[in-house]
Amino acid sequence: MRERTLPPKAAALTESMRDVGYSLETAVADLIDNSITAQAQTVDIWLLPNKQPFCMAILDDGKGMTEDELIVAMRHGSQNPRHARQKGDLGRFGLGLKTASFSQCRKMTVVSRRNGKLAGAEWDLDFVAEKDDWIIKLLDTEDIAKVAYADKIGKNGTLVLWEKLDRLSENGGKEANESVLYAKLEDIDKHLSLVFQRFMEGIKGKPKLKISINGHELTPFDPFCLNNKATQLMPEETLRVGGDEIHVQPYILPHHSKLSPAEYDFYKDRSDFLNNQGVYIYRNNRLMVWGEWFRLVPKSELTKLARVRIDFPNTLDEFWTIDIKKSRAHPPHQVREELKRILGRITDRSTRVHSGRGQRLFDSVPEPVWIRFPARNGIAYKVNLESPAVAAFLHSLTDQQVDAFKELSSIIELSMPVDAIYSDYSSDPKGLSRGLELDEEENRQKISSVADMLMAAGYVTPEQLRIALKNIKPFASRSELVEKIIKEKTDV
Image (cartoon, rainbow, N blue to C red; front, side, top):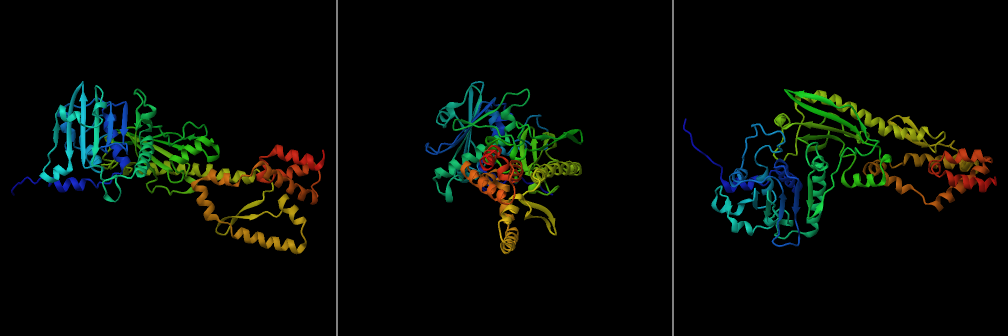
């Protein structure tokens, strides 16, 4: 056999690497991984639509790099993924800086300062295509002085500058739409505040990480709602693969009725309870994947309050099949069965919390307007003709009218828009409730009208009226108004 060196064609491979699958927010997150590994405490992101030349900058105050270290960092595949990394290293393939950057821009410049000494290097895909060779440009002092935002680097730190941002423009044009850019910045905000939440809140023994976009500091987003006392923490379990540990911490989030308006609005704006249920996988405290059950349990409305936090070290990367973007991970077969057992337990608890509250709404009212009962194909609801309000109304009708009302109520029962209610409740449960609320005058009017019907049907004492009115859910939370109307009606 003969041996022959066969390097890839630079022009072709660099273009292919642009389509690994990064979004703008995952690309930015990949660069912040490098900042955290470099022990940065502050990361500033700049993308100003009106600033010329148009560019995006990610600037940190980490330990920086010498020119030799920078050249290594600019190399594709700068570290073998099979080699052991330091305990807190968030890297994996030695490709992140390059693939993340090329996915968004055609020109990437890195300027770094270590102990006051500057070094700079640049990848320009147009230049690579022209030469069809793996050539980077090393910057001298005068070149670095011309790099946008380079003057913001402190005594130590690194700037990654993206130019020729062709992926941010619409329809392949050169100009980026301003409204589209602001929407993308909002996506970056939400993504980073979730992915790096633990670093931003502070990890024991380390300072908090501050991330800002165009001078606006991000607020960390806790997907487990731990500041709410109604969040349930289930026992943590530890699984082992070889000599390494995987920590599994299940949670049950509060029912939406237990969230304050501010909490609910914050969570609704940043996540969907139904779609974000499931496992949250952290590697070295960095969130990798979330909102997945990995086909171990089905995703449903009843399990939407279940969350499971899984922590594993970077020594288990190969077992979890981490991809280049660090946005995919799958449980190793060594722990799948144990994980399935744990997930089954947590989803059962979520189902009890979610369905139990609905059951209590019926249990707390002796004669509700609606009856919940098992039907041939599941659960059904029908109008309770013995409810005091309904019975009082029927009392005022002729026999023929009563028969007509019963026919009408059966049509209403059969026409209940279950699918629409399910959809609205899943996406915005509190919004659905708010849509049914009445103002004070409407409540007064309805309570007064129902009280008149009840009195005509024989509910004449204050206590009889009180019991009957409080069996009607919309009135149950209006005790003071009910008492006032009863007093007016009975003159007691």
